[in-house]
Amino acid sequence: MQKVMDIDSGVTRAAVAHEGRARRLSVLGATGSVGTSTLDLVARHGEAFEIEVLTAQTNAGALADLALKHHARLAVIGDERAYPELKSRLVGSGIEVAAGPAALIEAASRPVDCVMAAIVGAAGLRPTFAAARAARRVALANKECLVSAGAVFMSAIKDAGCELLPVDSEHSAVHQSIGGHDPKFIERIVLTASGGPFRTATDAEIAAATPEQAARHPNFSMGRKITVDSATLMNKCLELIEAYHLFPVAADQLAVVVHPQQIVHGFVEFTDGSVIAQMGTPDMRTPIASSLAWPARMAAPAARLDLVRLGALTFEAPDEKRFPALGLARRTFELGGTAGAVLNAANEVAVEAFLARQIPFPAIAALAAEALEEAARRGRVDEPACLDDVIAADEEGRALARGLLRRYS
Ligand code: NDP
Image (cartoon, rainbow, N blue to C red; front, side, top):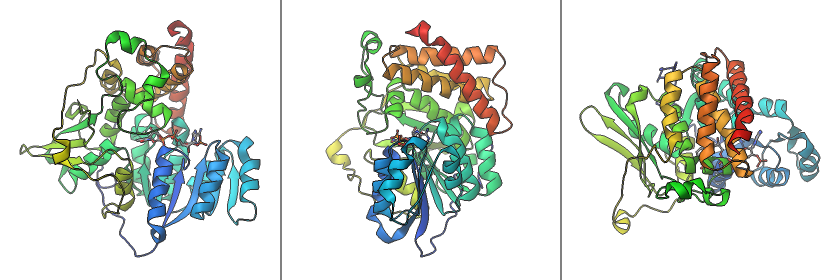
């Protein structure tokens, strides 16, 4: 797998200075879990931010409310059928309104200080690439830019001279732990995993898991798709692939440790035996605040960590037998090229099918693995030259997965 290792233009560059003026911020995926947490922080810091663009896909009512509350300049809804509702809600407000996939990309291309890229799924690829070309900083929540398009995305970031800050709590933890250290002293990067709702479940319980059970993340309240990914541990597999592209280490320097309390979000082991970790109570507003304010800090309302009250933190090895999705990261690194795009797309199809009760829980990882192997057998995981190649691989992964659905149902 090819990766871009220019840390100067990657996440370790702490460049955006505080100019003493409000920072212009666009939030892509404003109505989602990350989007609303971002806007919650913005609301607490009144004068510090000006909202340029807010986007959503179908939720016109919530988008209109957010646009009015935050005095956005532009509100964009991806699904054109929701345009009349958005328009009527914002008429007379002075807020520009637009709809459709092209409008989303155009909105993401507005030059701003920072774009929060929080659209879920492969739908976030084109808008986030557009943001990378136009914004000074991209705060990246969307996983697909790195999982599916890693090397291509990092090249786009580098070419644009954009600063990339990870939003995901684990990558934010690693980014903060690396701090100003020279990456050549990194021995290993470890991401922590809650273990999900089925951490202590038996094989039989996992086989019978329902969407309702999978939706109960032990620590975080997140969107539906990522919550199911946390239950299968596919989320940790995707995070390993993200970490590979974000940080200047080889695949075998990345590891996962299960840590049910999710207080330690990630840590970095250095060549002298020092281990630097980032800790905090599980609240996405902390890593989001870090991505917005870095290298400064902004106040965020997460419950304060009381280690004495907590008493103990526990760690255990992940069980790849019960959670085979985790091992797919290794296979993806071996295959390289667009394997990440195929895996991610197949997983999206499988998660949707699980939520629609078409396939059982263990079939999610099995189906994604089979789609990945089939793509490799067909020689369809070549190194991508551009985003279009990634999107073609994504479509291939989806088609392969859909073709397998009946067999797994
Ligand atoms: P949500 O499902 O809560 O929100 C997704 C957002 O994207 C909504 O604003 C939604 O609009 C919009 N959206 C959905 N589909 C499309 C589409 N086809 N085109 C354009 N916009 C679309 O997701 P999360 O906030 O949980 O996650 C966002 C991203 O961040 C994901 O990639 C996730 O993996 C990642 N992430 C999330 C974390 C979390 O704690 N939630 C943690 C780390 C990473 P609408 O409301 O109209 O549907």
